[in-house]
Length: 283
Image 1 (cartoon, rainbow, N blue to C red):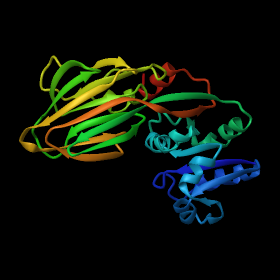
Image 2: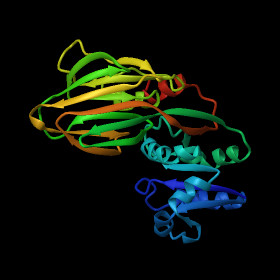
Image 3: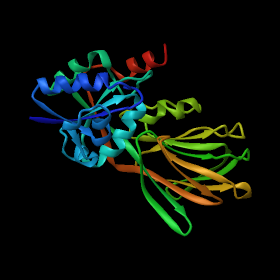
Image 4: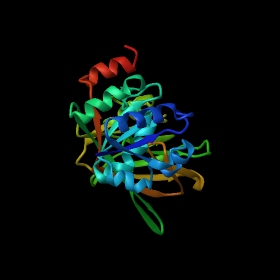
């Protein structure tokens, strides 16, 4: 009996109609559904409740029910276990969640029959040097963003790749993104679109205060160091995937490198990256 973790976005599947539908389908296919305690209680499905860590550790694959944001969260938590994720789209855009909710059962059947492909998406790991401590192990699938908080004053960033000085940016923020994250905040900030299987990272300034500041592409084997200086000891934010963040002050150093972990995504349709890009961008 296959153990399958179901991880719904509680806001997008408000009445748990889709969650319950997929549980019944999995049971019909002789699979064991696994739900977090919170989801099981809210959906009155306590029989399938498990501790969250147990789901990520023991499920043979995970079903993310929601939008790209939901899959980002599932991807970060599952990465250390290497569990593959089937993304069912309950949102709008859906670059990552390729399977549509009306065909969810069909996608699950294909996975159970082995009729799927695997995409391993590179991730980032950030370390923050904030005196007197060092914070390590901040993992992101999309991006690491350093932005100002409440102040209207710009930030100054000294950018290094490995040990080489690259540039000093004066901007509202800076984005370091993976190819997966290139179609997220990076795209809105005028950054480049990167093919998802490329081993590269982009450094993109947010609203730079000079016309010569442009995005830079570097190898995934490089280590990016950002020295952050806020004028007047103002707060700034370091965030991963726009979901986890910390507030810092004054001068700090953030280092970003390729993570040892990957997010593993299951695809049951043979659609090229460029087909998806044209569709999602309305071309």
